[in-house]
Amino acid sequence: MVAVTTGTGYKPLAATVARTSMRRNQTSRVTSPASSYADTTSGALSTPNTTEPEASGSERRSKLAPGLHLVATPIGNLADLSPRALAVLRDADLVICEDTRVTVKLLRHYGIERPLTAYHEHNAARVRPQILARLADGAAVALASDAGTPLVSDPGYKLVRAAIEAGTELFAVPGPSAALAALTVSGLPTDRFLVGGFLPPRGAARRRAIAELDAIPATLVLFEAARRLPKTLAELAAVWGSRQAAVARELTKRFEEVRRAPLDALAAYYDAAGSPRGEVVIVIAPPASDTEQASDAEIDAMLSEALATMTPAAAAAKVAAMSGRPKRAIYRRALALKKKPPAESDP
Ligand code: SAM
Image (cartoon, rainbow, N blue to C red):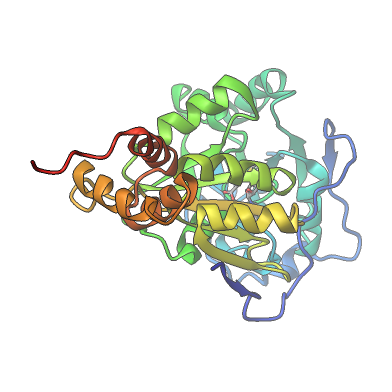
């Protein structure tokens, strides 16, 4: 059975951050004629990591400490921007983001007007030295991604490395992340987890990545594009069909839903339903621990009993679900058992 919960539990307070199809290579300045930069924050927000305002004559008007501020932004519900993130975005000399058109919407929503620079995989090598030069000049630079926490399957790692090497101060401005949000609503173990990012799209690299994850004794959190969800679930179910899992979709947004079920049931559901809309994260329970796993002899006994009335595939599915072992391996065992001649009875 696939258990589903839906809804954010409250009315969305704000529009969602939408990706658009425009080009994403420009450095642009946010214009927000109706907004008052000072009024939206009303001076009440505390901004740790701040310094005294610079001496007059400087172009910089920021109270923010010089350095690179890594700012998490909402994964859908704009009300999830923290007061501190808001203050940092408001006070930064420069905001770097993946797609200026996406971040512009966030800043406009809060009446913030700051210079924006696009930083993404296609321009990073060119733009990084310019950002580092600004940092070396003592600028307070905020790095945000389209949604969630920068650097988590998003740009910024090389910039952070280079900034550290250059002796730049780094500040975390934590907040939303789809990975953690999905993990916490999945109902799966949270004591140890691995954020596996996106699987390689296809081929040997994808199979290798899945094989590498096979024995990881931790809950797995995978990003995936919604249109690829049915195919990915089918591939994962072929390896770990009986593992409990969850698909967390459109978190913090109007059509938020979480489906919790064994991977093979989720795969069957999305095979029938087709690709969902929106954004999804797949969360998969860790493998059953060795002590919890049935021995080979126990597996054979369960299989023999099941094979008396079932096809090898059905018997394998049943025993995989009972034992927590991968269905594929159990199926191979079922076929071998089926071929084996029955043991001779005692003379
Ligand atoms: N850095 C981001 C973070 O910390 O959330 C993740 C960036 S990754 C490029 C984008 C992926 O996050 C999407 O493909 C989807 O898997 C997931 N995602 C983003 N927003 C989501 C949401 N509201 N609900 C479910 N998954 C989401």
